[in-house]
Image (cartoon, rainbow, N blue to C red):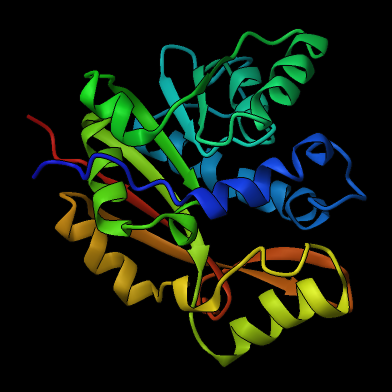
Length: 249
């Protein structure tokens, strides 16, 4: 199956470019991601270590793995992956994010290949990766199936894709849109569109159609009492994450 030539939604890109300078401010517009990041990293590192038989206690456990962080933003996931030894490409369709990402990586002493490009363009160029991180992106694209098909094409046989997004139900509207954008003002109003949210069953079906084999899914659950995130085996009602593999040769 050929990827759609471009699944970028210009209005979605404009939203994130307007917030670009705040990526590394833990108290700014990306506060929810900073709070969620340890939880995301725990899931991602465990999935990569399990799939590629890596010891997370080693100094650089992901050495030798080529990893794509699609929709990398300011590099909140690209940087820890580079520290763990992976060869990291961070790609984003919002060009305004990348100077922030490049400067922060340089200040952190990290070598990361940041590019203003799309999954479709990279797939057309024949790029290949062991791991694709596709975190909080699929709910912002114009055509989720074409986008996921492109990310599948970017994986080497036996490669791993980690994809997170938001469920679509009344609770996710209450928490992710009304709660985060209106009540807490963590994000500007209009950052998310509820009708673009994807249920776990819908995402699994899309991943299958794109040529990937889903192997795991978990929920990211926010506890307003402890003011912290945790991983849940059962609660996928708002934020959730999946792991999928591409069949070997």
